[in-house]
Image (tube, rainbow, N blue to C red; front, side):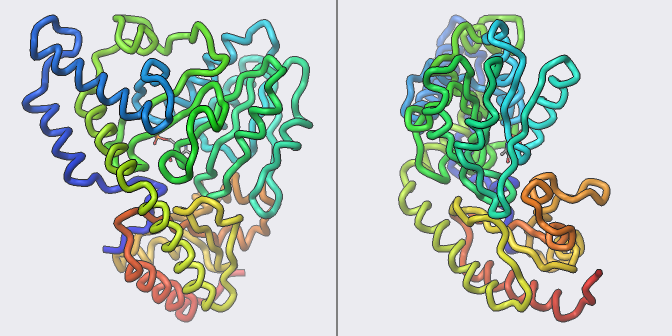
Length: 375
Ligand code: PLP
């Protein structure tokens, strides 16, 4: 198997699986229980929170566990708008956010909010000046992702935070693809809300975290119930998921520089190998180290993904066609239909070896040589 889809999800290292198994079988108490087993489970949750806080260089109480990145995005957006309900009903975001943000904002438009969607250039980049131009008196929230999940473009969240310094608008960033892939801390980003997800960094699926800091105050709880997560997200804590998330973060943190260098080397090696395929185009700025987006114009990505999948090479259709519709990201970048339809995303992890990339390059070339292009 050649797994080159780490931006979709990642394998769980055995240390992570072990930490989860322990939480399920031995340290299985309810963290709210008032006896030793409960206290041990509570300690697991507290330690997990500290591990995420260490990676963000923030205070543990600024980290709240969620069930996934999608939940974090939806919650942060609604909480920010609630806090700023007297500021106005205008949202600034980008046209290339993950659907967890885009669909939430679309829904809010139906509820009476107004939204401005900033578009990237053909290179996939967005500049802080474009966000500045979209701001209004009544802008209550700016939500801009840190790393785009299709192109690997890195957006200027730090610069946007500086723009908002003397404005009431709160800043949310979906950092799901940036966390432990590019260097940042909660402070360096300057966002009020930062969304994370465990399964993109070797953690389990179904757990994420939301950083709540900066100017975020009296956060609207996501749910109402018991007092867990400081009353902000009640419900018995997912101890095994939290233990796994924390262990994954610790493992990546221990090897952070080595992993960053490895991901960058994989991306650069892939660029070099794939550049030899006639007609292949690179899409986006290749900014984040773990994502490379390429197109074979005229060769539909779905066919490429299926054929390579049959050979045990796993990549994703960058154009993530939903019923034949091209990706909103590639469309917003202004790519020609043929180019967008032929785009695939290749993404790397610590487990990737150059032989995976060699196999991919060979299979892509074979696909191109053996198929007729579609007009
Ligand atoms: N945001 C981005 C940028 C993502 O890439 C993803 C996952 O694909 C999500 C949010 C959603 O995260 P989760 O799968 O944990 O809900």
